[in-house]
Image 1 (cartoon, rainbow, N blue to C red):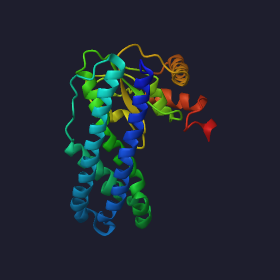
Image 2 (image 1 turned 135 degrees about the horizontal axis):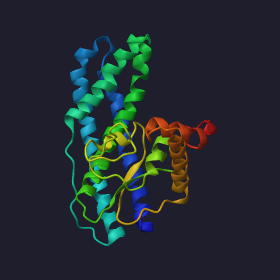
Image 3 (image 1 turned 120 degrees about the vertical axis):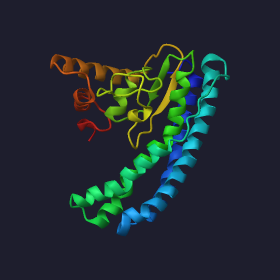
Length: 267
């Protein structure tokens, strides 16, 4: 957790503010969904994509702006200095376009090909896309924290911060503490940081987690310690079974025995 109570409060305020930014982006995106016409997905895609990219860009920038203000205040609370470089990432147009292409017409075509009624596929098509909109918008603030941390000589890394009822995936990543810095990748193993890749791999579609710069020792909260313990138990089981510590070997064990949002016990 943050070194100070003020820093902790600022991180939570930023997490909620970021969700307040993604919410209207999803509403606007839902209204724009009608421009992707089921009768001719390919012909209607360019117009829809232009509109959707405009929405993503606008709210991505708002996410960055809010995160920049948060980082300044957070530094002041944690280390007594609001000054310092802040890296504002450029809007990744090509990535965004690919995400909405795959989440829009490609997903619809795949669902229809598998036998889903076209009208049903279209009616439910935005449900999945809404998660992608949330992730891509919040990537603005998350990327700013990620890239700023990499240029902050006083930071030891950044950590994932969730709320009290996360899914197993989020709890597992929270349990890793401040291992995250700039340009990480799974390299086939989401538990091993690297210097290539990107932060987008660490956040699923409807994720409400945020990123917090760590300037000192990370001391888990009581709740976070339970997640650390759950990870350690699952990891030891994987070791005993002769398995590498990967998402496939850790998550199902944590989910099975835990009380996470997607655990059997929580159902």
